[in-house]
Length: 291
Image 1 (cartoon, rainbow, N blue to C red):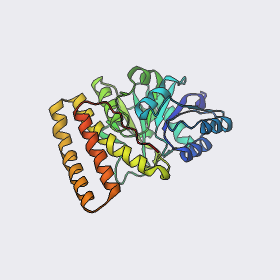
Image 2: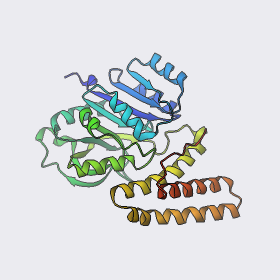
Image 3: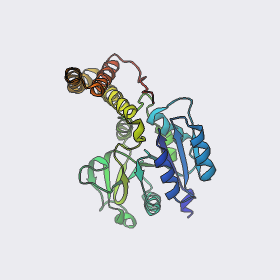
Image 4: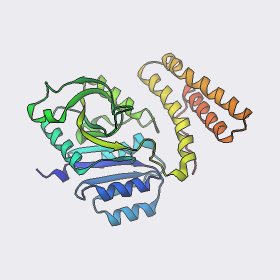
């Protein structure tokens, strides 16, 4: 078995240069890496591809967002497995080998994800059923859990990933929740390994000098995506009920920030409010904060 030719690591990146350089440096050079570079930095593409022969940087026509970035990476992957991640993560080569080994032996699965190194606050999944006793004996050591939703880090058979793909109406937030919801409806099997771990640097994908861009993007798209997800998968009125607390919160934030002359929070509150209203009015996820 040639481990290192079995998987392509895909990253949807936006001003994530420090993380991409770190990942390319640490990952075995025989693993394939695809970076969808949404900050459209041609110089970064040239530097990465010149320095790391296993890495390919794809620059879309415009900032594609995470869902479309994953789809671009999936469509360009030619290995048996594809591994989808945000750049603010770190995984060892041993963990990658373990994922491949477990996947080869498990066979019947759609997603196989590692868990976070630190699970004191949250895990890399929602909803679980212990399946150690049901799993083949040769993978019991990986301590698998059958789960409903994966939060981060999607290791998949490339054929399966190409079959389902992500909903590109999402720009950011809820796209992975929606993806797992679709897999659940299709009765696919998703697993998390408690033995295989990776580190997630929470909300650290974007370089700090672009923090305002990141905050504005989060404020608008988190709310737009929340409404869209519930409207798509349940119904319009259920989505209204779910988004109402966010709408009230955004209005209070705007009023308080104006009164206290907090310019940044005023802008963020307006972004939250407009994201909600645009989603309620069925506008597309059009907002792109400028660096």
